[in-house]
Amino acid sequence: MNNKSRVVLITGACGGIGKALVNKYLSQGASIAIADKSEENSFNLSEEIQKKGGNSYAFPGDLLDQNYCDNLANEVNQKLGKIDTLINNAGVMRRGDITQASDEDFELSMKINVEAPFRLIRAAIPLMAKAGGGSIVNVSSCWGIKPGPNHLVYCTTKAALAAMTQCLGRDHAHQNIRINAVCPNEVNTPMLRTGFEIRGLNPDDAINELNQSVPIGHIAEPEEIADVVNFLTSDDARYICGSLVEINGGKAVY
Ligand SMILES: NC(=O)c1ccc[n+]([C@@H]2O[C@H](COP(=O)([O-])OP(=O)(O)OC[C@H]3O[C@@H](n4cnc5c(N)ncnc54)[C@H](O)[C@@H]3O)[C@@H](O)[C@H]2O)c1
Image (tube, rainbow, N blue to C red; front, side):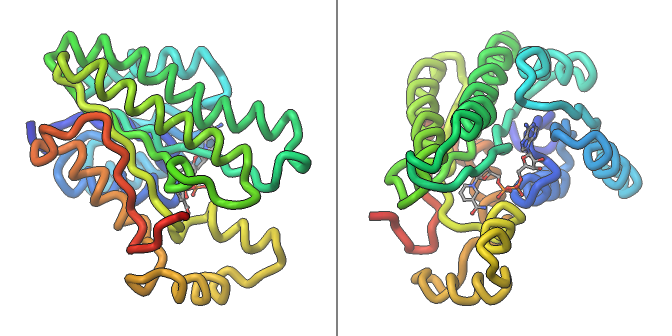
């Protein structure tokens, strides 16, 4: 199935990569289920899309809420008639080594970055299987493959999500459900920029400097991630299951 006429559920749809994903799928005529924490942002984004003639529906909620996660796929299925594609994009990044990590850092990150995708996928798979197939992409991180320094909790959660993806890719290929992950290095989004602000740096200057460290010449723009996610959910990727696709402009993590 091509992406046109698909129903695509995107978590973290109002964030940096989320909005790029929304725009990518909209440009192909897909219907978008917008899931994000902020009710206001979710409804505003959906309204904006509808004004431009696109098809979207807002399903705001907090991924810390287990009931919300368990019910979301079903709600999308009921309101939009089906669910072809799920993109687990929402995530949080808590910084620091293990001695700096609080219980709250650990619990919050595990819940949003690992438990929420687990619950969403568990609910989506029977619906997709019944409909004859589907696709799922988890937004992990290059640090989910090889950990970077001083982000113990974040790296742990993204590695869990990467492992989950590989298990799922194998377990559900026979149902024509393809599950893959993208593993980006640095992307120019609020998540990255606020990190610089917290450290007292000017985000534009810091990004200019960071650009020098990437062989291709710049850190990723959100659209460069969305294009790969789109490919993984398209028929062109019909034989790709359980893959962890690094998107790093040549900047590998060692
Ligand atoms: N920006 C990067 O450099 C980078 C690199 C690798 C991977 N990633 C991953 O990409 C994904 C998207 O990140 P981004 O950079 O666009 O970040 P972002 O902060 O711009 O967006 C994250 C979105 O997730 C939503 N969210 C957070 N907590 C939530 C909750 N409890 N319930 C519902 N929604 C919630 C936020 O509202 C926000 O819209 C994340 O999983 C992140 O870990 C980002």
